[in-house]
Length: 256
Image (cartoon, rainbow, N blue to C red; front, top):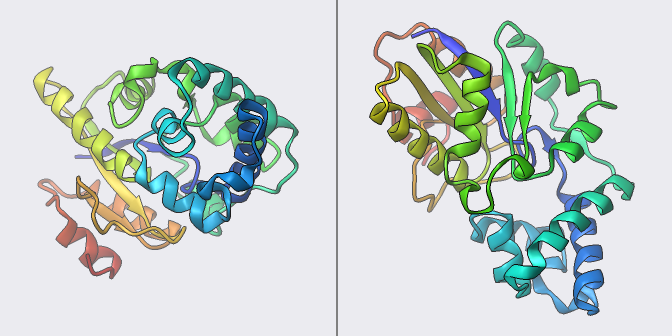
């Protein structure tokens, strides 16, 4: 089945934004709680921050579980997130090989579905010369609070805009367990609706992630951005692709 679209997560997939995200969250917690960021274990280091993010399903869960924010504080946190990001000068760079991968796959439409803000994504990618590579960007603002990833709403909306959900193979590239879970739910929705579009999950490992313990196994693993080109090209020419982490590990050389 020919490839029809590639959708990307943003943080940890297209760009390494961990240091800025840590800096921004330190500012948010001090502003919202009146406490020092040092009071929160998740903000002690990039490593602690990464571990906390991995424990949570989405940004709302992250703020409630790691910082004890009440439900009525989450919207304020979201507004502060955007404001602080747009003024924070901590560098954010694309992962090595990502611009070249986007160029190699430029014949396909690309989109972004992220739990970051659409405004932040555009403001970061445009100066890097990457903003115009993406036809559609779905941020957390475009998805109902109770339907953030792993719910498939954002991914389905992006694919509908890009492909009208016509026949073909689409790929969602991400670095978090919720990305693979999102694909699984989107797949179920498409089957239930009798659609002929298929969607595959590619888990990226080049940011230091691991898929060990993921509740939903990704279809493919990419140790480098260049691996994504090979996966998309190869699977686009397979009549009956084989899903599963074992084949993904074999493709990337990674042992699950």
